[in-house]
Length: 446
Ligand code: SF4
Image (cartoon, rainbow, N blue to C red; front, side, top):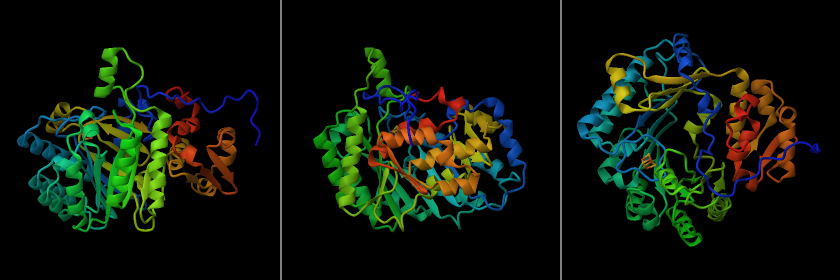
């Protein structure tokens, strides 16, 4: 294909890391989700349950031992046991009300996710109580995956046995780095020795899938330290490794420091360095027999290890999501709960909805959403979109695809769009190119 002379090229890469969100986690962008669309959620909930849409259950635990300097979530580091228990009760009240609606009643969980914050911040009695109640509301006995995010420093043998005992199949360890100075200077609560102990004990408990998260580009990282961290991760031999490239959204501690000093560039590695570091990790894991399965993941055994939560949501599954600030989805309507725990709990006590904003998607937006999100897997098959949405992606996105091919980010085949490694490492930047025109004004790189 030929690029017309007056067509803009793919937006230039911003080399320095500046403040802002770069990661595309959903579509349309959150800035389009509005309070006046909240009634659309109730409309779906009054419909009969669909026969063929998988249902996930998510519960958000907004507590952490300490706030990391790069954290952009609303987290609480000062809640006592009674407050935590009160929060769990409120969350289960919310779940009970939703689970009884016609659209959800009688459905079982296809996948379950404990996210945060830090789910492993909860004590073992709190975890057992929470999981027991969730199972009563939406049974998990047919769930293909029960995923749980853990901060290594909160784990001991008893807690890990409890996590396995409630049915968790996928344990995701938020390691981020193995260098203690980097962990400390970025505000992480744990240290590398705790990772080692937690990982080795977790291995004895029969989790189907143990994942390690790393972040490329934390403050004070260097080539040498990153290579050592990757070597350590290879040595541990997780079932999967997830790597994120550090971004610095506006509500982080790092951004506050930048603002105070009048700086535009964040004190973290620039984008080319982060891509080079992720590429190094991918190469080292490939040498150890792993397969790169997305822009962020390598997997030891792709036939056995799956990411059910991620893949189901990208496919358009329903997600009964409860807890403060959590994101859910019912039948084409996205929603997000209130972001502050105080108003959230007051609304629950008063028997009011805690949904703060929502978005009713169109069929076209659902198509674009799925195409964008699945591009992160590195391979897209046009035949799939033709069959599911009646859309010819090669024709519809011809200008973007052609430019990206010219620039070396992807290769077009007969029924395949395959990102090159260079494209995969910056797929979040490329994704914006496929946004519908009405959403592009909010894109980071347009
Ligand atoms: S552990 Fe995660 S959620 Fe908690 S403060 Fe750190 S980055 Fe934020």
